[in-house]
Amino acid sequence: MLGGSDVSPLQLKLVKEKQLFNAAECFYMRGLGEGLFVVYGILNEGISHADGESALLTTLEEELQRGSALQRTYEGVKNRYATQLLFEATQPMQLAQRLCYFENAGNLEAINQENEVIEKIELTDVLSAAQKTMNKDNVSVIYYHPKS
Image (cartoon, rainbow, N blue to C red; front, side, top):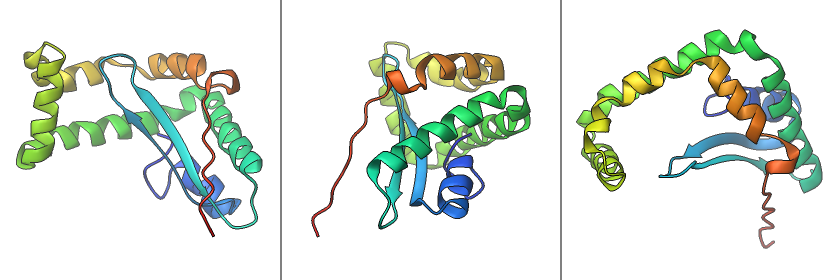
């Protein structure tokens, strides 16, 4: 809902509108525990790391405050995920990775219920989890300084 497309809030606000970054996205790395949610941006020249970090956090906060107004976006994300699961069977490497994940988790049969689990998650559940975890006091920040 935040990143991964040309019309996502990170891309629209931080790349196109404010021109702080030349790319800003996010992704979730699923693990056997809670996993890891990563938000990142590639700064444009002349923009400080502190300004970039502040803009990322502000955008996250603004999106969380939209609440139920995100319902249409949320349904679209769920639909894209369901479609992705359907087409994964034609991509042997991705299917093999998912099979390995579920086997390692000790429940191979859960691969067949993944779409049902996603369908049951409501926007309120997502917003509640996001509000608990996505705040300034709960982030780890890495600044990368490439060599000139």
